[in-house]
Length: 623
Ligand SMILES: [Zn+2]
Image (cartoon, rainbow, N blue to C red; front, side):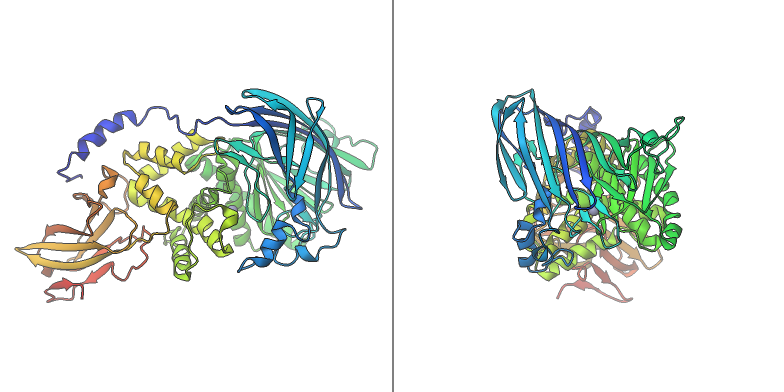
């Protein structure tokens, strides 16, 4: 029900006529790349050598005179930006801090590019740490393609962070961030970020990768194996007989379409199993062959099939034919069509990390926002959807997103809170980055439900996925989709929460009985704006809930599918420090008055959110 006497109700109805129009949101130009790589890995020296042919299409309106590549493995060298940053940040990450400085020459990572040609003409190369600048001999005009061909070589570092050889669980090769990777160019320009610690951004494209290595290794990779009949190792060959070539090497040929990175892992000891999501991808599982692991990993596929089914139904359709869960790396790290996770876990922890990393497929993999600029749009949204999946797999009575509010509040309390819009590598502390990317991001989505309503939040997230998949969305894209979905104006929410560290605090100032009515005076104590929910509980067990929209919303959330049915009242004019909510009395019937009764907002001080009225109370006024 909507009780407002303002004209908002009329304008919202008119707006909704247009709300179903197809969305042009996210329709910005995208660069395109196609890699053909051929690489040999020497398991004695841990060195690798390869050739790459890369077709780059410039869909931008700009003429490009240079391009950039990431050479991530160079981060694992004493004195690199990753090394120095990991030692000088005030709260070092134990996985990295100090370890790179100790690496011997045969343990470091290396990545280099040689003999670079653009359409047959030699290009000038300027490597600097983890980034290579290539001066193009021929400018690349708008709407044109060009072909780069080059040789690359390097050394796989001992495992420090994400990638490397011989991880803590004895997995031989975690090959992530391993090849010279073209940097992304978008409407904000080049994103040739050095590899300092945080995550990634890449160009959409197709990968055709052939790896040559000793035949004793089993390989897991982004993409679909093209020659299973020459490989075996648990890959089904269909009707063909597996016939391995008479050589001590195997040539593994993988193709991945429409992805922005390519990762792989190899071990001599991998057990490889599969399961099928009905109507969805084939799931592959790779883990070391030890009795404990075999027992726990046997339980994983059933949970993961349900995970993919739930995500497909609620957050959008997974588009690729395959997904692999691979023991490797140093915890859990997402890649297109694949994740590297540590595997020595109890089943609850194994399911938890597998849900989180695979749910990244929707945010990191398919939407693929720039994780340098908007890390919370990946980690936080993944946490949000992952919490919903975990609630489906292991139902609990509590709000599955409550811990995101706890994390955010702890960060604010610590004094380390920074503006979420800072680049991921530039937060002053690891704690501020981590809490912002994960807890704040999840909280931002969940709290948006308190503004637009639960039904429009869920519908809006699906609509966002469909409008922005494969398009690198930014905050404005989600904002516009949610505005169209809810018929509300939401710029104040996005600006206030993303671009400031302002805090949210509403409180109850007084509750007084006047002429048989109840006058509840509320006050805004923080600088952050939100609509306000108020619940009145009566002594006879009844209760009534009121929703006070913020004037800037130009409307009110729909009352359908709300956990707490509410009466919408007049909006709170945003400049007003206080608001008077007048409801029927008498005071003697009232037991409690509570702001944000479901704990759906990031109220920084909840002690002023609730007033109790013992029998015989005359009212309440803040001291
Ligand atoms: Zn994550």
